[in-house]
Every structure is written in C-alpha cells, then in structure tokens.
Length: 121
Image 1 (tube, rainbow, N blue to C red):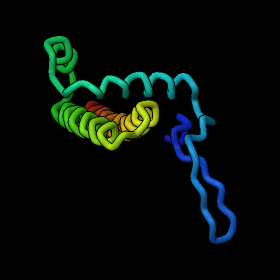
Image 2 (cartoon, helix red, strand yellow; image 1 turned 30 degrees about the vertical axis):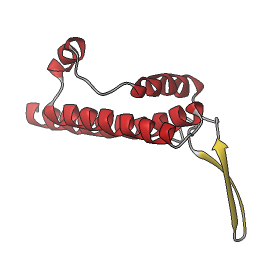
Image 3 (cartoon, rainbow, N blue to C red; image 1 turned 120 degrees about the horizontal axis):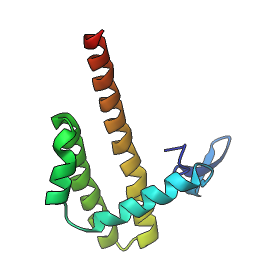
Image 4 (cartoon, rainbow, N blue to C red; image 1 turned 180 degrees about the horizontal axis):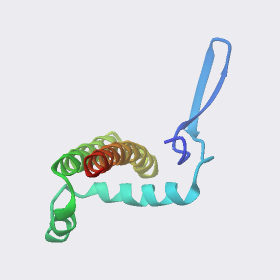
C-alpha cells in the first residue's frame, strides 16, 4: 500500500500524532489504476459469463479470495457512502483495501508456483 502512496500522511512529534490524506509518494500509475478499479465496487458483486471464462485457469483458493474481496469492498463502498463520506475518499479507501486483496492473491499464486516448481524438479 505504501508503494502505491495510499497510506495516510502522518506528522508526529513526542506524544502527538496527526494524520492527514494519502501521501501520493508512490507509483502514480498503480494508484490511478487501483482507484479506477475501486470505483467499480459501487455495483453489486456478480460473476458474469466473461468473468467466469477468465477464471477457468485460476485455482479455487484464488477465486475464493477474489469473491470475498468483491463482497467486502462493495459493502465497504455502500457503508461509507451511506455515512455521507465524500465519494473520492470512499473510492480511495476501497482502492487501498483492494491492494491488500491483490497482495493476498499474489502471495497465494507465488506459493502455488513454488510448489509446482518443487514437484517438477
């Protein structure tokens, strides 16, 4: 999340700690893509025919993480907008959390690849 610059700005001295908006010091391209992807979570989760076709080559564990992400991020989007939060801030918050799910999937895929390489050798 820090790589994308979606972590909170912080100014701390002694006992005081003040947090602000996102730092924007990370990868601009990644942050833009994630924020754009996060805006799609305003729609209810669904597995369309196109998505089902793309998921044919993906393991069940990865599909489970992705499905859990769809539900959680859609719910978070709805809850934050219902509380009256600014849409831009909501999308940024959802995008930050989306990066966590992307990281979890990457770790799972990397472990599967290592396991496959270990068995092939």
